[in-house]
Length: 480
Image 1 (cartoon, rainbow, N blue to C red):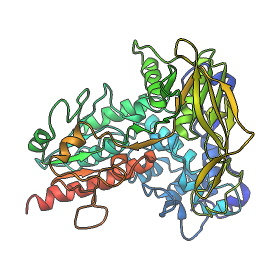
Image 2: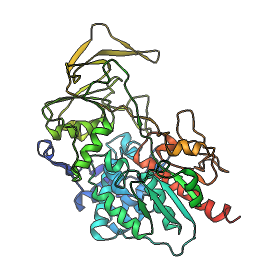
Image 3: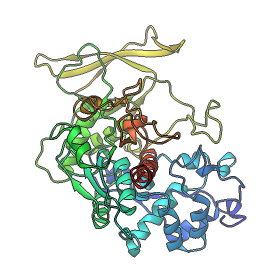
Image 4: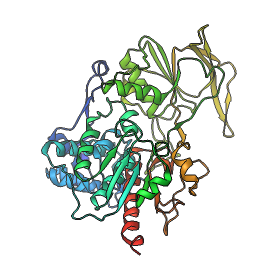
């Protein structure tokens, strides 16, 4: 633990941020790690709570040893803090920037005070570790002679690939896009996480023996049968990429896009690619969907110089404090303001889109709908609340329904691959729960392709646990 009386002496601190009016002028990260003295005080707030719910089932999915690294930071033992963190999390620079921090929601101190600044401390530890040169390749002592294919280079695929390479297996990660990273690369704006963080991890993994192959769409460029013939084990980590659509009147009008089309093109442009972006400059922007992806559309639109940005959500506005339906230590249902919201947005709640209007060129000009109320699990329009708002661009950010079935999964279904009722890969066919094994021999699945749309921290957790099962299979069952 930290200082026994620390939670009584120190208040929660937050990472310093550049002023919203300044940070919207570029796509650089705008939060800074804690200064050492601040980090020490924040680590000192970690109390001797007895049962650390922060890394239990309600807390950190990667099982970070949070009280331990808080204590190391409080005592100034930074390298030991990094060594502790690296035992459980392959990429704390990803989670330290992007995770919604369920660990903090489960913090015992959070019952009476703002919780320990776990996420900010995590980011401060890893940023210092890179600066000090502590993050180095971990090459295996010996090679197993087994070959593993990982399909998908998002956080689940990267975590699984790194763990398997460190265990001595020869790992090849296939990515259908032109760069490694999956949605980390093209779905997350640079102002939330600059892509240099992915690039240096990629270099580390290459030094550990991982081979990356980009612009390779497995199931299209070559068959699943060939993949199974060439490798001793296959890990499916290809995400959940089919976006939820909005089949209402006028959906086909020009200017209505899925959020990922908007974000991907913009990220490629920021990376220096000669690509035409969907430009929100001087336009009325409507973002449909109140989650993180919608928030990313808000921040990107503001950086383009949008005339106005409105984000709408079907569900009612959540309470400002933890809702009684999600008591501690559960992740709370409550009102949240993202850094993109701080930069300017009109937020509308309990609103249903009925359709879109267009001009003679077929270009969207307006969105119309009404407020709604929930009755018996259904959303009912409220009479007299109908509206029509100007809209030059509309971004659909309502989440993802399931993995892409065409290509690889369709190919593997011919080999006996089973899907669950939601269309995700069914992967629990091993000798124990959580085996990550699919119905096809030597094929495993982890991350969003298995569990559905989820958090980056869950993807890393699944990648690590899946790798453990694959390693067990390669070193025991295969030999037997």
